[in-house]
Image (cartoon, rainbow, N blue to C red):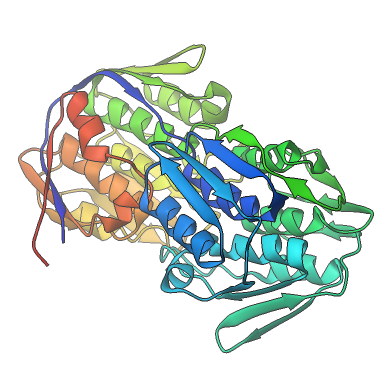
Length: 420
């Protein structure tokens, strides 16, 4: 398998441009199958494996796709199946959005249970609760979720926990429910808003996305549209953290600064300089930063997807830092990899206690999941000597051309293609 080889210790300087949001794109692409006529032209689609996986799933259902660089056109008028059971479905967590999309349009969906990064138990009970409240019968048999209904009826649904996946999935199905559906205690993440805006561009009637309550007035059909995906909040945050960790000055373009406020606040608290200018953020750092405490929370709190890259930065910050991971229970698997490089990290349940060290040293380390992979790349960038990051297929799921972007900033990083 391929690996990244990094000679660390170089400050980062220059500008990079952020791609479209992975977490938005992998929900918008399934949502596109809800258009019964016309073509969805979607721009600012990131060139990553997770997106290609969803595209292949759409094609397996009968969609016609045409990709051109960072855009894709989807004609879903001739979908000939409501059964999603390919290998791509099984390995792709976001494939569960097909349940809401197919149930809404066709009143039936058969979707194999998805996989994804091993960061903890991620049940779909809140998704099922929402579908059943709308009038669907849901069963899990032989590794598949089957949801079907004669008709979907709008109702009030209160989610027991704040869930991005359940919010989006039930919103998809509710788009075709008769009457009004009110979703309460919903997720407010930027990609939830982006999916709602995309559905509205196709003719849906959704209000309140980004607040605690979303109201969906059911419609009879959706049509194709043109839409551009928002910038990736997590990719931007990762490069912000890398700039702070390595020292130097990096301008990150094509971002929405408001989406990054929790990250900016922590970097400023540590001693980095963060400035905003339109759709750009510049991070300037001497590399001499102090430790901070972090608790991951739903948006607008500190994002769980940035916790792992941030933990790398904290390994070389002065003093003690404590991270409380309130979203996922198994998101410190990278701690053992950081220890190979000299980090002082102690994991206790959902908390990590990090005492800063003067330096990390290069080693052969593994990307245990997507965001952990980004964390290990940053570790290699700041370490003394050479670091090899293996299992980088995880990284490729969410970070387009990561080695090229860091190389453009002055990092000594290359991808080594290994024969299997």
